[in-house]
Image (cartoon, rainbow, N blue to C red; front, top):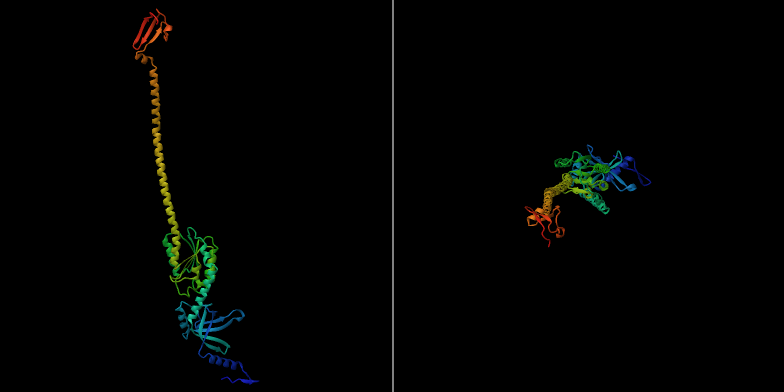
Length: 398
């Protein structure tokens, strides 16, 4: 047992051991019923030590930053109890999480270390803090119009080149691949394999978005993650991810969680679907819509072509018929003209004239007598009739 401290000028004078023991006793007496401590988790590893978790709680910034070491032991059942209570709200301990722990005070004399032994957790405090931070982030993003930037990008007419950000082992990603395969459409898929939960998830997803954004052989970037607890999906409420989506050069489609989940990534994305399967179906619908419009256009073009061919055939048939009938009509007209000329010629035939009772008179020289002044009494004339001729002597001219 440590000796009582001596007094030096009325002030206690301790040895190191005396002071450490006194401090430990004073702390235990002052906080005999335990104490609630609020702070932000720092320095916690993803996997606990065999005996439990060892990390720090911090508060404040810069020179005002305060730090306390905390321990969450496994053998006492405290680790199991605390993690189970957090899990009922879809939460898990991780760096950056603000918590309120019920602790016992411990002062380790050998090292002169003050530490807090975690016995319980106020889950409502953490849930409320996360919700408040989330709402504040949403307000800030909406105020800056971040939610509208990626939505302004046009989806390519036929989005076949897909850049998918997901875990290759995730059930949601596998379900989406099945949708693409069953569609029968020739999609070209490039996967960026990332963690989709845990502390590294947000930074890996952001890096993948930035990588796809720089590529010109990508039509759509797709972020996929199946359902899980709120803690599992917390990475998709990250501000840096929201900003990366808004700055992406390609439309970003999301399929994160279950039907009831809506992340901040969904809020700022071009198109948000409730699940990876629904996200895949949305992209498939874009392509099928184009194919449908193309098919309708082809059908309309075929109808117009058939109509044009039918009209052309009718015009050709009419032209052929005209070619067939026009020469006959022209020939008939020519024959008619010839017959008219022939009739006119026949009318000029003397024989035909004489057949109607006319005759031709010639003198002895055979010249046609056209006037009585051309003959004299006693002169012989030859009168030609239709059926012969008569020789006469002119007795007188009247």
